[in-house]
Length: 331
Image (tube, rainbow, N blue to C red; front, side):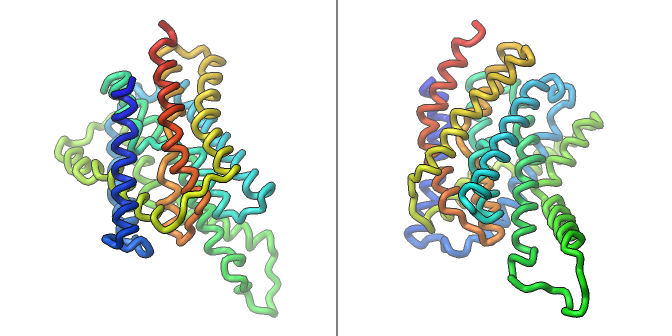
């Protein structure tokens, strides 16, 4: 169990600390990482997401429908709950609430899932990682991007109404137009389109040429490492603060999601192995997408960043507990 935990967390900590040190010492300008962020968001991650979904057989994805169901409900349930709490109970703006919701709701599939699932269940179960990647890329990620787009492009972003004074603009029509524009921009991002096209390839049954897979994996393999490096650089801009809000967020991310995944699998009478896979996937620490998204839009959330750090640290206990449970569950 300790070796599995080390495989999952040691590389994550190492690369994040490497980026943090590079930002703190000035080897990488932590106030301007736009180019690095673009490399990750527009090239590495899309290639990785596309290959992960396109090379997974559709029948394998469908066979794991309890995992698909449990991850969809846990991720979106936690996301919506935390967004609503931040937005209306704590009076945060839409961008801040969205970044915190993504930090709490979306686990670190891009970097931590592959070594954990391979070590625990074998490489033949990596299709589970593709399921998690597909759910995360097609649900909470586009929603967060749309909210960031809307906050950036709406009248509140500038404080100025763009329509001429003599024209009467229906506020509802204007709001709907802004929402459509924000959604269109969000859904046109490579990080959203890549898994969509990958799923279409999977559904069609077409096998990508070996040369194409090898070429995409050449850049896609850097996604986890580069993402964590940029995360560390961005984190070096701000101090870590363990607030009560952060503690609650980590509890939802590391504990509540795993428990909810277990309950859903029990409700649908999923086989023990499927239940174990779903719980381990839900128990992974918070992912770094929120930091990359926020950096892309010039929205750095100190609390979301602290939540990701605390979730990763605390997962040394919670993920270890989930792995220990998985060894004994079902037999």
